[in-house]
Each structure stands twice: as structure tokens, then as C-alpha cells.
Amino acid sequence: MTNNNTSILITGGAGFIGSNLCDYFLAKAYKVTCLDNFATGHRHNIEAFFSNPNFTLLEGDIRDPQTCAKAVKNIDYVLHQAALGSVPRSIQDPFTTNEVNITGFMNMLIASRDAGVKRFIYAASSSTYGDSENLPKVEDIIGKPLSPYAITKYVNELYAEIFSKTYGMETIGLRYFNVFGRRQDPNGAYAAVIPKFVMQLMQHESPVINGDGNYSRDFTYIDNVIQMNELAMISDNPAAVNTVYNTAFGDRTTLNEMVSYLKTYLSEFDSEIAEIPVIHGPNRAGDIPHSLASIEKAKKLLNYNPKFPFQDGLKEAVKWYWENLK
Ligand code: NAD
Image (spheres, rainbow, N blue to C red):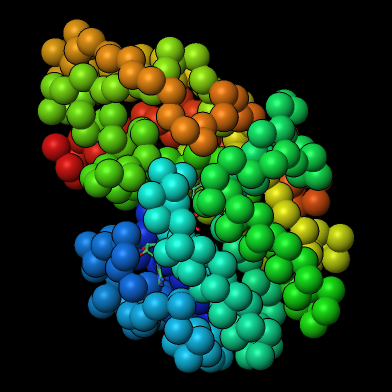
């Protein structure tokens, strides 16, 4: 392991994506600070890092400007992941989603500007494409937002652009498309579909698909997302900054196909899972029928080269859930 004097702040570092970023950059000997209030993240996601001298945990809330100012001290790069995810959560409680995702984001931008961080990289979202029917999604063609969550993520992009232009900050937004993989939380009312279905199938329960299952998503394995964060951080291409990128594999899979792969991979551990029937429920508010990213911009400007197609990532994720949560 080489010594690395670069320091990174990962907000939301106790969450699914954030803890994977902590893990990856600690393994590369970066100095990593995690800022998290454990609203949806978990101590068990980061416990393994506590003994690493390069790791610092700052427990706090991005809604508090002073906490943000403290967190960015001596930081080179910010990877801002902290937010309240989930479209249904934002429909249930738009106020708190707005506070965390917009006010919290603004606090982090201001703190990063004032501390002179080298680059502010943030989790944007494919939900920004809203009701646009364009496929594949290209970065500069978006529709109207379909949920409070989508509004917050779009507002993040607008503020990042204005901060770049007005204060000369370097920012990069990564529009994540349905990320999945190790440590994604399978529990709670707002769990993402893949971990939720894995847990249900492992417990011999029928997963409930919203709608007929022909909706499709560009499901993106966590390691592809890590690669994008690293490229966004280290890129020295001046044309690559102050913009947003689709962060995806660039392929789509229907919900029905996804469940069928899950059953196949899980039945290698427990053959009875192959027989579990699937239930279909009503479509969910705020869901778009299809989502597929063009990843040409990231390939061209950041040399992005995703290593994990959906099925390869899903096999890895299933194995992780079986070994860790069964
Ligand atoms: P997650 O819920 O696992 O992680 C979010 C983390 O932020 C949690 O650890 C949570 O405790 C922390 N957090 C929430 N509110 C906070 C606050 N006020 N102060 C400090 N920390 C706070 O979710 P995730 O899937 O890892 O998502 C990470 C980021 O990626 C989010 O910004 C999310 O909107 C975005 N995103 C995720 C996906 C996906 O498919 N998972 C897709 C698009 C965008």
C-alpha cells in the first residue's frame, strides 16, 4: 500500500454507496473522513474502518452549517453522498427531503467553497430525467420532475453549476442509475427493489412487483459507481469538470428479468427458491416506465469503462447477501 496524502470527505459515508467509497479509498491509502448522522446509514457499514488510522468518523448533520464547515477542514476532495433517497419517502415527507437534499447540499457547497476544496463531486440522480421519454437518456435532454426527490436532485445540479460559474469552484455531478450491490439496505419501508427481493426470496416469501414487470431499469453495480467517483476526482481534463454524467452500465433489464436472474442465482444456494411465485401489484406513483443511460459522455471525457454488466454484478451481490445476511 502506498502512502497517499490526499484527503477525501465522504458525506453519507455510513450509507450504501458512501461506505463502499470509504472502503475503496481507504484500501488505496487515502485519508478518508466520513460525515454521517446515521439517518439511513449504519454503524455496521463502517465499523471495519474504525481501527484504520486514515479513517475519521464525524457524526453530524449536513443541515447544520457549522458541522459542514468543520467537516471540510483540510479536505482536498468532497464526495457528497448524504441525502434522503427514495421517491416514496419524498412523497410522504417532502419537507425533510427538501431540507436534507437542498439545504444540506447548499451547506456543503458553501463550506467547500469557503475551505477551497479542489473539487466537489456529488451524487445526482437519474430521476432528473423525469417524464422525458427519450431513450437512451443523454445528459442535456431532461423532462419535468415526477417527485419531490427528483426536484431536489435537479436543484443540486442547478446550484452546482451556479457555484462553478459564480465562485470558480470545480464541481461534477454523477447521475446514478439504480445502484445495487453489497451493503445496500434491504430493510425498511423505502428499501430498494433488489436487496428487498433478495431478502424476501431468501426467506421464501414472494416478491411483489409493482405493475406487470415490463418496466425496465439500467441497474448499475456499485463497482461501476466507484470507478466513476474516482475518475471524476482524478481527471485532469479541463473539459470534464463543471458538468454532470450519467453513471450507469448502459443496458436495461426488466423487473421480470431481474427477478428471474435473482431466483436462478439464489437457487444455487437453496434450490427451493426457484419455485417461489412472484406477485404483481399496482404501478407505483412517480415511477417511469423505462430507464436507460447513454454513457458516451463519461466514456469520452472521463475514460469511463464499466467493468460490471448487470448479471455479473447481480451474482456478486447475491453472494454477498447470502454470506452476510442469510
Ligand atoms: P443511503 O441511504 O444508504 O446513504 C445515504 C447516507 O446519507 C446515509 O448513511 C444517511 O445516514 C446519510 N444522511 C442522510 N441524511 C443526512 C444528514 N442530514 N446528514 C448527514 N448524513 C445524512 O443511500 P445510497 O443509496 O447510498 O445513496 C447515496 C447517494 O446517492 C444519495 O445522495 C442518493 O440520493 C444518491 N442516489 C442513489 C441511488 C441508488 O440507486 N442507490 C440512485 C440515485 C442517486
